[in-house]
Length: 223
Image 1 (cartoon, rainbow, N blue to C red):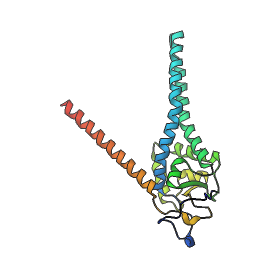
Image 2 (spheres, rainbow, N blue to C red; image 1 turned 90 degrees about the vertical axis):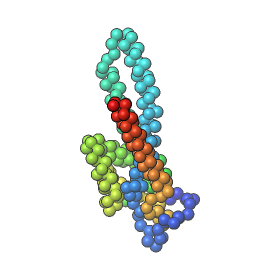
Image 3 (tube, rainbow, N blue to C red; image 1 turned 120 degrees about the vertical axis):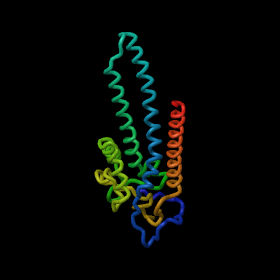
Image 4 (tube, rainbow, N blue to C red; image 1 turned 135 degrees about the vertical axis):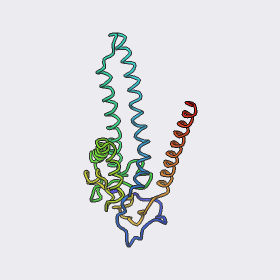
């Protein structure tokens, strides 16, 4: 397990060494990590899919030039491939990062949390891969209801476990949990989480204002 020597001394939010237990990562800390990871995985997916789209478009033009018509099956096949990549790449990213010595994706590293087995041990690649896949399928198959259930369970269950945590026997805990320095664990939100959540809330607010402004302008123009 990761003991990560040489880290900064315990801050004001650290817990009493005599009372050190496992600090589970709650909803908002996990949300901040997910916001960061969503940008990372989006960039990874775009980095692969956009070149594929360019190659596919060129190939389709060449095919249409030779045959006079492009095969619809080729277009369908490409979109299935692109959709598969958009699922497989993030799943591989989470599986790789969470099975590393850090036990955390870049988002979780930023907010100081990690993913472990139910007993505190390190997860393997495939467990991390399936954990993300389970979350995605739950969200997609329930038209988003699964995301609400996930948020509720991550905030309310005893060990802050969401459905995909129960399915894969995983926990999301403070980076210092299950190490030889549990007193370094931090209760509540850290500074990075607060900044990320505030920036994201501001972005949503600005987007809502922009949409409202566009609707108002279109309404005035239609009169």
